[in-house]
Length: 110
Length: 115
Image (cartoon, rainbow over all chains, first blue to last red; front, side, top):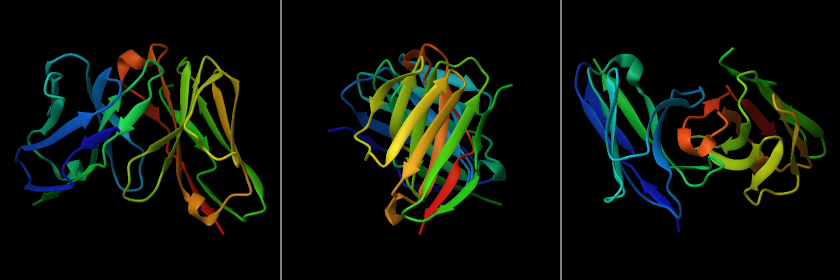
């Protein structure tokens, strides 16, 4: 079967650093994406890793290790507006089919 | 124009009704997707259209019928739905080389309630 595992909830204070881990087992793998979704909103793309290593985009960084079937999203200098659900997702075929993890609720406190 | 639009935002329908959801993008994307999302759950893929052809149907019940009239438009026709079909229906699009980008642009969704 296919599965993506990520923690259900993470709580941190403003200014802190949070790391959300994602381990996956899928029938196909083209890359690992991360999406942010605020309550009542649509998912918004954050980052994509097709190759091993670290990708940095502003306060957010994403890492992938294909040999370990593992990746993480790093959120730095947390802000209140970062309170949201974060989904890891694997692109499993050339049509762009995304398999999502269950999501991690990030709660940022003052 | 870098957005995906969806109409209507909210829809309430009875189990005998026929309705349609509409999605539009003008980013030149050639892959378009329908997802269903229940509260506190991840999006679940329903259909993928690539170059206006249905590429993936994730064993969705026939009461959901997708249509792609042209490269900018995607419809989802609904008929004889069940209360458990109540959910947020999301449309997304991605650049031509969908599998290599990993980036999908999501519309705001249609909140569907089936009575």
